[in-house]
Image (cartoon, rainbow, N blue to C red; front, side, top):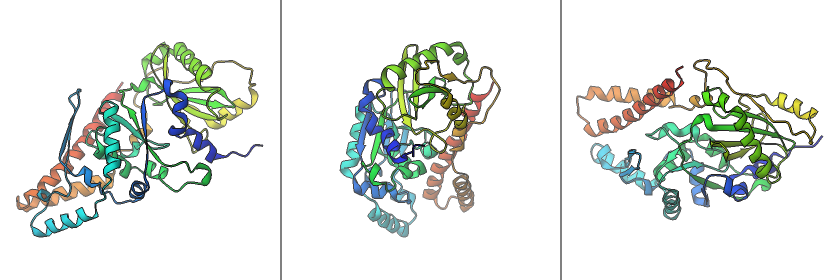
Length: 360
């Protein structure tokens, strides 16, 4: 029995190590090495943004989106000299990464002004509550730093690594695309054989999947055999794809195979392993494709777990309630609470929107 070297597998699945191999079949990306001082900052738990993020900035896009980042250290949120002194002390503690922040800004601009953010292995999906848009779409460095600092998944990527996997730390910015959730699929490879395909947003129902089932499998199998099978270095792995149209499949990511590494979605890893034992390398059967053939109503979606933290919500709501009894004495504090309430409102609207989307 072969001993599995997880560190070697993780190295192969790092975006920086597979991007050049599949550049023509994936989304344009900017891979940015993380300097030591920035790495030390990202490992810290305290959520203090760099000085480059403290200006008031408006960001607009062609879709009409607009957001404002507020200077948390600005005097308008204080009351009196003591608050001003606290702001000065906080400013002294703020780090500054001028060159690195400029590199991030240039990268976002080169990708069209919007980008999808991830680290070497994970995206900060557990932290999207922190942005006003409740999205992983970043438009400036404030979005980037907020998501990275608030994400436990990304912090895991920034931990110390073994010598086998010590190839530096990176931030990846991908050109933003609005992707229909019913067009993303996860593919399971065992012994270099494509065993199974599952909708990425399992168990959501999408009517077109049943109608296009044969074409979906054919397109993904073609991509695997022509571009991936003999190029990607591992025998066992998982890869995600996006199929925007017939005969067009785009590689999104690679990840480790197995429990504790990648969600098996519509499948079970024990079952996949058992099936792999009875198959031969010469077999060319199509992979098993599981999907919901009928609308079963609202189903639990794991991504909904990563919402606005309840302790934050209760704390902020309590603060807003207590400040409401001051009779308008501290208008600056009320302005600050208004910002928090706007964030909570955005979260509530986002949850309502998700529920409406999932209604039969």
